[in-house]
Length: 258
Image 1 (cartoon, rainbow, N blue to C red):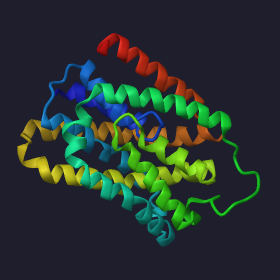
Image 2 (tube, one colour):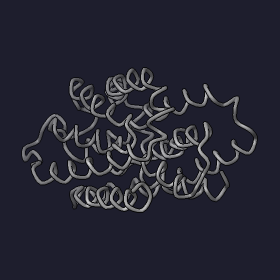
Image 3 (tube, helix red, strand yellow):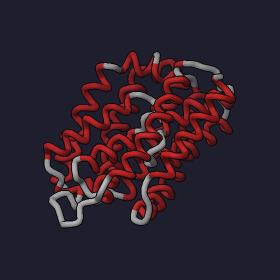
Image 4 (spheres, helix red, strand yellow):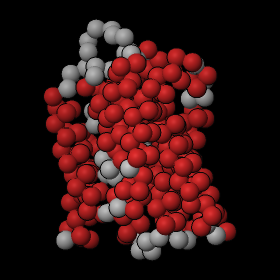
């Protein structure tokens, strides 16, 4: 993998991590288009580069991580994904992250579900206990974590799963989107740390430099996207993202996989 490859993938990661379009799916498809050789480092790169994006969350929402009520809810939401991700790690690492077809199917099906959901969903009119992510009931936080665990399948989108799950539970749109941002920190932080601990000895010096370039690029891009996405959801639905997922899945299938 070259430095240019790392920059391209970093831009994709930073732009897609918090949007309901699956950053991991984009990285897998882009790696194929860039003809990056399949290797253990590539799959580790796809996992670890997400640390750059979550660093942007830490910078943007650092005050929220000093709130004990927020931290308790994040811990409860993180538990399901931690258990499922740890249990299925070999399957995720060695099978799912190497399957372009899995990504394409997940993008396509997820796009349809996203459009249908937005057409049917109605936001609560009256104030509720979930107007703020700091007051989400623990039961709902746990259920959001269960929805997030579906995103171990690349192409599903962690943010789409948590946001749609939260909306189904009656959580305010802005609250669940920001909670999804915050939940990325323990989730992606744990995934990155676990993978690096298991595989860092196989990295060469060049790999470390390429990974650093990708992380920095993802960090800078994510800082910009976080603000833009929050502004977007205050005025629009996620239907454009659903359409985008369907189009991307179709284009990649017919140009590459068909």
